[in-house]
Length: 382
Image (cartoon, rainbow, N blue to C red; front, side):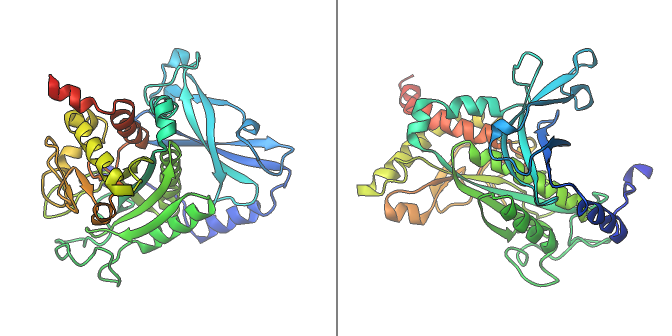
């Protein structure tokens, strides 16, 4: 029973007042930099604070030094060689500390500057530095779904202590105390992300109670994945402040008639966006043909536990089958009516789960449809 009890934490009005009081007394000749990196599971986010002296602001990445941490405590290095190196790759204003504070997203390397296995950005970086990819100007819009749980993790917000909530149908994009659960978390995240300068394009309540979504993009290249990781960090910090657990489990409620949680990737290249005489639509259809023989290769990196979500129901395709369609949310790849009508636009890859690594997903999409473009013809010939 002790394992199910809520962990003790000191979060109350007095605690926040004390932090705010001292924050207002902080010297202004220091930059407070919160270094953030992906931990040993490939999904956990770690962070620690570095003070940069004699500066009132940061104006370039070069002003942020490399750093290190104890990798043996994050399952990323052995105890006898535990130093893991941090290399800053993007910084944004910090919505939690404000003023001269920044959030610094980092890549992780071993002592010889080899990327750690959990550093999937290294794979994506190599793909996005390919001249074919640069010239194609790939653009992404990432739809991050998540589920809000009580702090003890026992039930989603909106689920009663006894029994089950009313069937899903009344919760999607809904309003009202009986329909929308956790809007304060979604709203706080929206405003914090805007302060940080992220390309947030929208939010909405999702199909299951306590389930929400925000969208990052459209953004060109690897920056879409960088921004999503920063947005995830901001969300976790807000959950910490509001004593609410943020779940990216692709199927948080495995019993009952409930939707899972995905992170659909809206994707296009410059050629796909060309609406002249239907050229863009044909580019999309050719990309779909390239994606089909690589389906299971993509599924391996599209999130853990995704097979529980992708059952062919609840607006998903089957995990082990590739499909595509116009305006069909039950397919692997959806092409919108608007894209069909205009003769160009984007495709939506509906396969990635909520806990996917955006570096893996965006990198694989570009690898398959740009670097290896036309590979379906070779596969067909074989």
